[in-house]
Image (cartoon, rainbow, N blue to C red; front, side, top):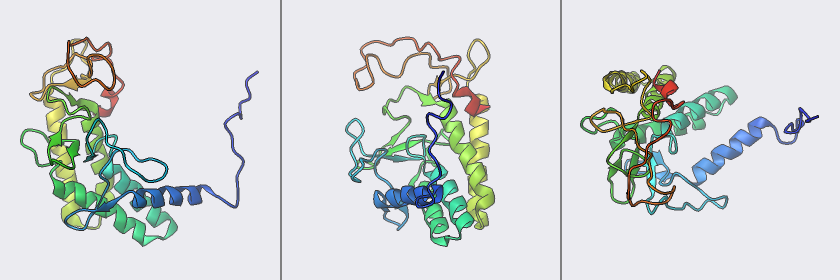
Amino acid sequence: MTDPYAFYLPEDPEYTVVDSALDSVRFLLHVSERDANGHLMCRSIDAMSDGSQPAYRGRMIDGVGYCADSVFATQVLVRLGRAIGRPELERAGFSYLEHALETGFFDQSGHPVVMYRDVESGAFLLNLEARPEYIDVGHVAKVASELLRVAPLDTDGERAARCRDIAVRTVDWILSVERTANGWFPRKCSPDGRVYPFAAEALDPVDLGLVEQRPDPIHDRSGAGTLAV
């Protein structure tokens, strides 16, 4: 019989879950830096245990998407700071939000949210693969959802209003996206909102050369669609 507590760790009063959370925050701050306006940012979606930051497919990538979720970081840092009486964590959280709002992720023509940016070139990327053909519909919706969670926490009324406005524009965009034949939200869509039924990569996760387009078996039934709902 499988041990139901196989993954259980007993409480350690010498290293609590709060201690663990604070160590995670320290690591985040260690791998972060200040942008040109003095706001916190992280130039890579990945970091090694020693704090070094590798490029992803040759790019240093910053953003608000699911692999570089600075808006989610805002929410967590603000809530943690308020819960344990550490206002510096709250300030850090809103600093990441300021970076996201001022850098241009929400200011690109035709798209309420562009999830990533090549830090070195400044080019905005519709997806992690830097492909121009598609947008991850559900993950764009998740950014809007995080902005809605941040807004009630923000004492800066103008900034909170901007977060809500981006969320509303994102909802309008999602409602304009073409649905799949079964009525579900597409896993990916083209920049003009049409269903994109192909796999993200032609051959394997690190191949950047699109040799042939292969059908995506879950393009019309992806769990990411729940994020759009």
